[in-house]
Image (cartoon, rainbow, N blue to C red; front, side):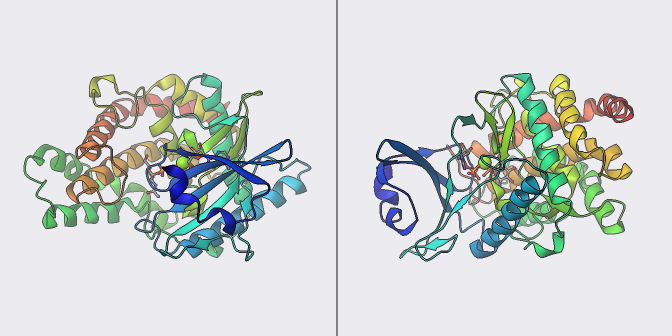
Length: 368
Ligand code: ADP
Ligand code: GN1
Ligand code: MG
């Protein structure tokens, strides 16, 4: 029962009122999230309680430090610009000791936020307008954080989007073959070896300074934006665990990879998977509306490279985890990571085929 997993945690946070119910939210691949409902008289108050995955986040204190800094900056920036921060920024709930992080007796790490209600994190684009809004939201996130010094943030997962390092990890997993899954994967392995040079294209430009290091979200799936149920406008960017110094190309690219695909990230029937160019255009419009003023010319003109590199990176991460015995991503079956890898490989092939068209559309939008 879900309640039994969290009941020892509830008295440790400043939750207001009487506990009523808990529901597990299962959309994420890493942490466990619980939606809590409390009542104070007639007043209903909701929270999210999250159990932090220690295999992925080795130093949860550093993750929370980043989240505290970033949410405070976003809150201040909204106020400074005369905007109401209510429901626009994640709000941490402190523990009774006044910390943002709780360590329980088993050594597990927990944190809680105020739940933003009457808003939906979509797993796929149902109304096209939502994707334009998502583009705007992730662009706005970068714009507001462009005045935050990136060096003040901890690198909570070192080399998170260092695709070149990810390739080395992939090669090491093949060599280890921990669970005997490498046999029969020749085509998949060749697929990534063939793209080895392309994978280095963003890392190389970050090193030469051709692309700047920025404060980025690093996990820009559309379900990490809450859309207001009444106005259909983007309200708040959530899931701030991976906010770190990074490249704007990855944030832009990952959002398109996930949201502009015609099928789910783990679709088994790869014939259903392609890149929807209308959705690509919508997101790009929203993103540019917020970022055209401050992204450098290099960043703007290279945005589609982000889509290609991040899709390749994630496909390879899924295959690496499959070879490694499913230690990183939550899986629903022993082949789930392989299915995910195949889906992202198919999407990448379609992205490669549409590359020229993407640059053409982007250039038109930039020039408008
Ligand atoms: P994960 O890393 O597992 O994706 P998220 O932080 O995105 O974790 O949270 C998982 C889900 O919990 C989200 O998709 C959303 O449905 C819900 N959620 C998380 N925080 C909030 C919040 N403050 N308000 C409303 N819903 C939230
Ligand atoms: C993980 O937890 P979630 O679902 O938001 C992963 C991302 C991947 C994503 C793929 C910390 O994100 O990098 O792109 O799965 N997060 C981490 O769905 O590795
Ligand atoms: Mg999420």
